[in-house]
Length: 252
Image (cartoon, rainbow, N blue to C red; front, side):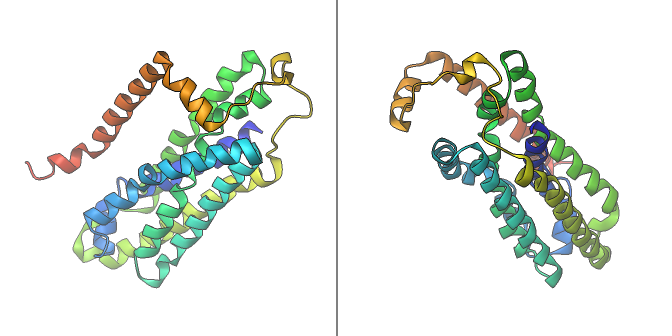
């Protein structure tokens, strides 16, 4: 169960990293893929996460854990399939498919806590949560290995435009294959609840709050806001670290 979720969630990292270190090669292969276009596509998950976050929470509460994960999985597969139309000579299928894929990231990130509570006992939840969270970085690592293996450093040179395009097309195909293979197990293995409760606490009936009631309770929790602020600061530093070369490029 945890393995199926880990593989499905890791697919978001595979797609997300496909527009990172290879940007000069993409721009060389596809002139329409300007720096601005690539930036919009790369950070589309930040924009899509806001509406999809609330939608995924509604799906979890009303349709169940399995439905939420499968919606995210289908969005990832739909986006990866759309990106394959790159072979017809345009970068725009990658742009559209990338945004479509990453719109499913909220559906694959939000279920982590509920998965740990539903399927694991108290002593196992910390480990299960940690493994689930590591799925994203694991997917990014796989994508970077594919980039380093398939693409050549001199693919960014104008004289190698045709070769760069061929290499990037093969990379997108390999990317889609990995995403598909990693997502398929979730359709067969993922369930809302285990056959028996993992602990006595999990078998208890809990109070149910509406979204508005829950938001009101959280707004009075100072510790929550401290954790929220901490994570925003960490994410801001991580994003700046990833983009620092963009700011330093004009300088020798």
